[in-house]
Image (cartoon, rainbow, N blue to C red):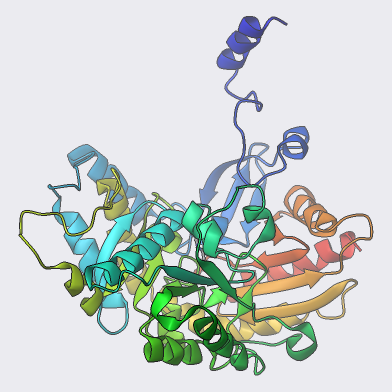
Length: 448
Ligand SMILES: Cc1ncc(COP(=O)(O)O)c(C=O)c1O
């Protein structure tokens, strides 16, 4: 078919799958056997052939309040009718301030100021840029190094992949940011296998920051960024005491500590933020996903008062931070965020997650002993299940599990490598937790 004719056909058929280059997806495999979702409500997705699919991953770790909640949908509709868009540069709308206050009130300590953006990746780049600029405005412009961690995921911006520690996310994209170093990851199967909650072993790995500080000189280091629980590389909860140790070393050397709470924020670990669970307050905290329960894109960085205050100098007509996005604090996102935070509060969903954690962990551990299960890790309403890789390809077994789960077992799971991640909406019932792990067990048997 000539190219122009092919295009016309594609335009006339919106379900032609070729035009959409899907993110983080093997496009050819998907387009041969699509997993199409057309509707959602509460704990379930519905497919184009009318099947209900239990959502075991809260979308992509984001729909913490469950799907299509009436009050959130109504708030978005109302906002769209009233004010579709207002610039956030030099102008504003009231809901932006309201939501910032609500988020700051949820965050621990003097994490009092919120910078809005539209995704976790933007939140990470925002946090890194604020950290660099903070040292600059204080006259410590030599602090330019950023320290991430192996197996860390901080989104896909150049800042995020530079401090991130996932090989495939980095190796295709050139030289990345310069002046970046990495802490070791915190996983050791021999020491930690089948741990519920934070592993006993591994706090000492934070001390590697001392080595890095000595190597580069502390006066060159701007910030350290870690996820309190590394989610995307297979659910790696922080070892007991690890985060406090990082905090202490950062304090000793004047290094800013950034927690990337894009996944752990808004109740995933049973608290508004993981920082509270661990009793460790970072200088900057990122968030996204759960802030609107996945309904409208939104992210942000929450900043401690002294960091914000450091910028509030100089002539008052001059911009203090040369950074921002057209859609920072978008009215629809703010409306969705406010309605979502109301739901979290009214239904006590963070407390609910905390109360369910032991039952969730017990249910996850029932999969121990199934064929090919090498490890299970749990924390909050999160479980990671490592499967043995097939000899003919890393990731093949878990990919098959995800496909079978969706097509044959009515459950949506997320896989990375050969790890299955289970992270349901926080509204999950005890019965659904049982159903969910029973289904995952059947899937694991099916790909033995
Ligand atoms: C810890 C962390 N940071 C950043 C991101 C990137 O978020 P986004 O995909 O919204 O850019 C993610 C996404 O999963 C994440 O888990």
